[in-house]
Length: 225
Image (cartoon, rainbow, N blue to C red; front, top):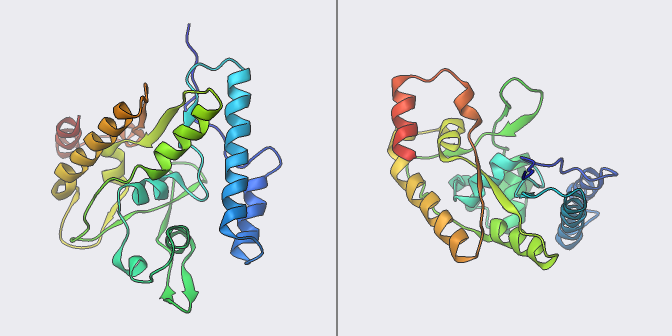
């Protein structure tokens, strides 16, 4: 019998993630310290799961803020007002999560919404009419390689294409159906890249399937899969 977990709490045994991000937000820690702490948490948790004889160990469940925001960045769903700030990748990410007020400009954070019926809040990706959805496998593959160096073949976890489209906010005249073909292409690209890098398993999370689905929803889901 094979064993698996769908994800693992990311805060760290002693809430290391909470403390290092708070230091980073106050300007008391730099990106290097932030990344170092994140890597230490991931490695410790992968080792713990391996020692517990879990066969399919997840990666991509770790996030510095929110996994839906991670998916938005993974697929270049970044509104223009954040891109034009000219910030680093990490600072752009946190500008979307928390807002930014500084020398480069003044922008509010993206909206937050309750994760289904829980008290967790996720960052709502914002899709503009001219958003160009494209795939960047940087985080997905770098974490896979981190685990591989430990001799652990993890299974990357990514929000499914249907759920991603359903959770986005569309700010123009276009709807999810207008972006479905582009989303299908980037998920195909993701799978090809995983295959090329010897990723044996990948987990697509589709929690939006818990809702009652209209005929339009069913058509969207069937087209994707």
